[in-house]
View: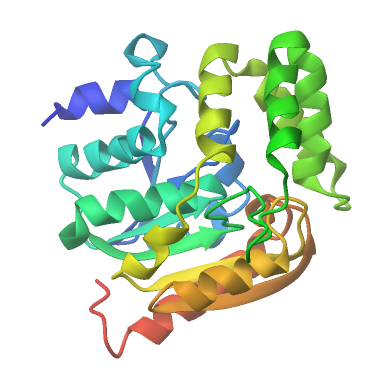
Length: 277
């Protein structure tokens, strides 16, 4: 097990909040822990919030980056596992944005005894379309072209993807902040993370879930349409689906109050069956 201080530095772990229940917040692709700042004020009095950056993202220690390890979502899940075990966290509520919803699911499978429940914000188990019965939102050729653009014009790639992720939400700051975050991420780690995110398919993992799950879906989302939310709810045991009247893929930034309210309601619903410290 890695030492506490090593994990704190490696993943730029920050702990805040005055509650006893631990809530670990995992950011999405191309983002960092700062994106949670809009949601934090709504949760910090009731929860101990543990924030971090995946290795290769944000203010993490880039010297610890392994191209091989982080070519697969399991590598990012290991970051969560390392944080939970090194900090000896228990009864943890994992809150994952976008791809981190699946990463959280992977982590929970490794340390089920430490995890209380999972909150998935704008999740998707697969971004690729499957002609047989699944609409993930993208054809493989389109995603390949998007990844190739990272090599040809990294700034142009960031400026194209950011508004797609943000949607046509009223808050223009979301698109601007995403573009800045994409551009500030190391291109090598960003491309590796992008490939692991957009070309993975974890649909078969959903039925194996054993923890209570809250699925928070945006009404209009170019990266995770309503079909995806319905699909995840149908195939994920112990899940609850809540659709927020919103546009874009970043509900925690554009609609933090609504997200917090859904989380609180979800936790209250678990009280009769689950012990919440």
